Amino acid sequence: MTEELKNEELDVTVEKEAPEAEISEKSAKKKLREAETALLAMEKENKKLESDLAALNDTYLRLAAEYDNFRRRTAKEREGIYTDAFGEALGALFPVVDNLERAAQYSDGENVAKGVALTLKSVQDTFEKLGVTEINPVGEAFDPNLHNAVMHVDDDTVGESIVVEVLQKGYCRGDRVLRFAMVKVAN
Image (cartoon, rainbow, N blue to C red):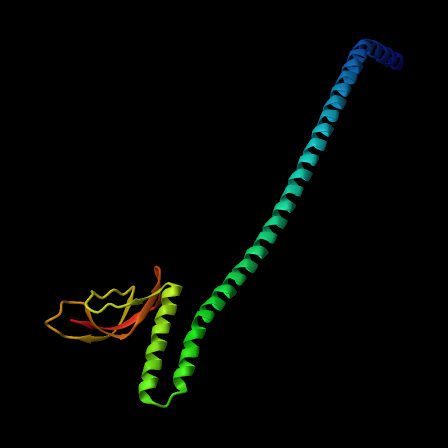
């Protein structure tokens, strides 16, 4: 009898659960539809994100290639500018070399002196064309940004840290010092 009782209890439980099973089956179908809808929405969003990623990757690759081309082009231009400037500077010195060769042809001291004077004038004209100016600090205060003090002299007639003699001329172009003036400084 216990077995029959158990079977009857199972039947009763199945009968009692049947309406709930229909409700849960309906709810499961509803949840399944919602999940499918959500899955479709996620797949659509995934496709959109993938296309955005592909577009951004394409943009990145194009930008990287463009930068690489820019870098190569500017390096080539920089090299060309240097070569052109170097050539122009040497071209400006050719007349000086010509004058020195002409001066060397003479054995007469007076003509050699004239040739050297003309050559010096030619060099000064060339420097002027190139924008190079001479640093002439005699009588001025010592400036370590322009001068290189190699000697010191005590002189009461001159103020302190005043340049009294230029031992080697200095040159600059604009704000840039090409060669510092070697000077003797007083006190």
